[in-house]
Length: 464
Image (cartoon, rainbow, N blue to C red; front, side, top):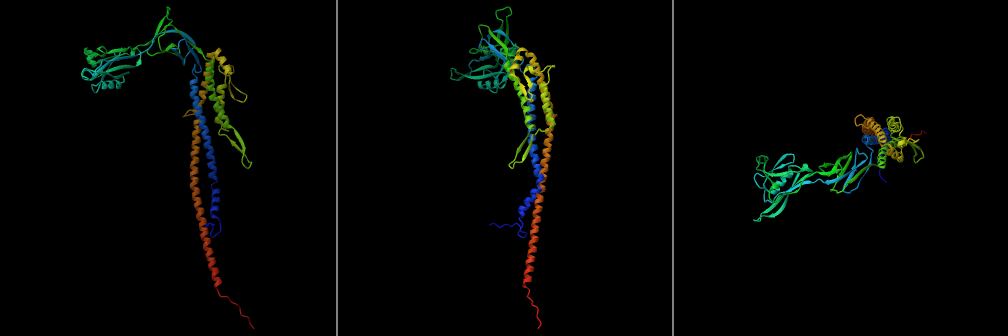
């Protein structure tokens, strides 16, 4: 058996006794820890709700635009012409003939061992007369190419091997290419400075024997209503035309001999899906509030009833938020119910969306449905902003208050820790002193008993 030093004099199990006493002393801190844990769970739920509202605000703001849920189908009679409908698009169509596609400007210099002329300077001239002068650090062809590329002129220069001259010296060409397509991206490169250009002494590299224009920079062009008195040519610096039809991008890849028909039609199914996706975000928030407002009843291992309340139970701020979101969706628009558009609430308070009704309404009155949906989105955005604004939001301020409360609990728990450490030390000193006192008294008692036992015995004398 092990030797216990507890209660050597008193016979008490002082370690267990102090542990039990400290357990009683620590009851307030235990309760405070439990309350802090609950407060932390609630804070997490409030922060989650606030984050969801901020996300909803962003989506609702986008959904307030008149054509936010408008979706379209596009067709083209020729695969070389692609059509994409975006924001602001409308149903319609047009015939066009692609007369040319856009191209970048490319020219190549004559073969040269090094840059002809000193200092190594060249001047780039644009179609509008704009000049850009480039000075290289050396006269090698590689340094000229590097200087052009570093100048960020929208032109790339590439050194290309071109064999050797009669003496065996390596020759190189410089290929200059615009980084963008279109007529405005064209250029001419001159050997010499801008002053040389003014003096007429600069050399046009393209005019040197052996140089060549590889490809002229040009705009893409399409002809509308070709072959009719209304024929009209439209050009674009790139192969994409973004102004032929409202909100529609038309991209061409090659010339066409015959007219190409492009059409844009309403896609009510995709519009329904867009509306449903937005309402789903509102539904998720309402469901989250319901779940976190519920009171659950369970039993522990001994069969005792346990009632657990949700983070939002009895919270008037969250209850008002839920009512505001429901009203934003449910309230009439221009005095009319949204039920004909497939948007309603069930008897149980669940947000419902009837895709078939919505699609039918979009097909019959697209402008009216889009305007009504934009109104709903605007009301939802106002509610979300009022509660989730990062400075003045009602939920934001509530979260800040809860964070402050938790911080105060943390401070109290820390103070309780120090207080309990001091109390335990006092108890240990007290019981240690008790043991010492009892030990001393026991020693004194033993001493007196031994002294008394050593006294001579005395027998009284009997008279005869």
